[in-house]
Image (cartoon, rainbow, N blue to C red):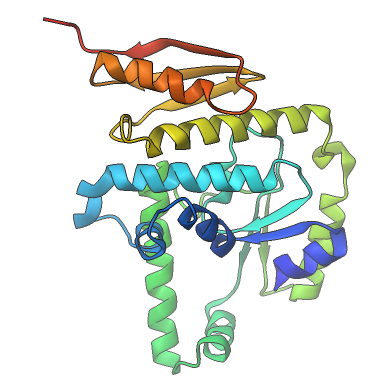
Length: 255
């Protein structure tokens, strides 16, 4: 509700996780599998780590493409981590007392109080585990956010006014040419990384991709020399790519 009201006030696009999931699913990835990979906490499924790498790569590509023109609000798990390296973003966490969350949860989920409490506790624990597993950080670490709003003392309308006023500060969040370039670079790098992850010849790799203008740099380990050729083919096929640097790839030594 807060994200939607802010998008109307500021004239920004509002993007939620479901929009991103649909875009990834359009690439041929199972919608059910993707949601499970993003929602299930790590544990016995850690042996499927490469599948999670694939899904997160595709989610980042979809998200950066959605926000690359700026003036957007995204509300979804770990969005600020997926957009690292782009222009400055306002990172917000909204918290609330348990009784407030229970009341809202009962209204939305149509559950009993005890069922709602169990649902909240499980959701919080899953988020904590996933954030630590995926990004190596604590979900509640205040340094991950610019603003933390506690709805114990503010209602949603007051929170709306605080965030709208902050977002309008050009000193911090003006979407200038440098921001646009940074997001373009991040979006292009994410797209190349996703293309490499989706190509059958390179789908078993886990690589990093950095873009500066039309120059693409790929870093990581390959398993065959042929994969280097495949990576160059894929990278050069991306829109706007003029040069590809593969000097930081590690290949097996022929023996």
